[in-house]
Image (tube, rainbow, N blue to C red; front, side, top):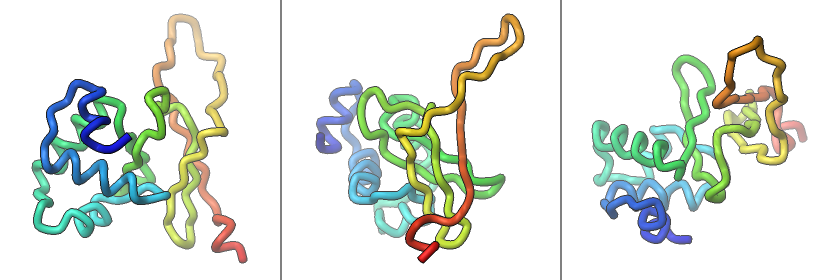
Length: 133
């Protein structure tokens, strides 16, 4: 599904920034930082518009954010309408790539009574196959 169709399917208006951000993430196989996206967007990039656009796309479940540490977040396109934040990610300490691990789901934790989990983030850190060669 192209960017315009994706936006339309979620009831969102087509804007140049939304289309460009989705297009950038569709071209990539790994999650991207704001700086990575900024370079791809060129003159269309505006910091305030970027954050508003990201928040809109997060709220619409079109993209998801992966928090690496206190300073670094990366963004990835949700692969399907059912894709949500409840899946694992792998962060390579050498090349800094983040890969979605859709087949690795978070555990079902036994929470205390009256605690209700709504999201669970799993970030596995190590060395990817490419860097391990």
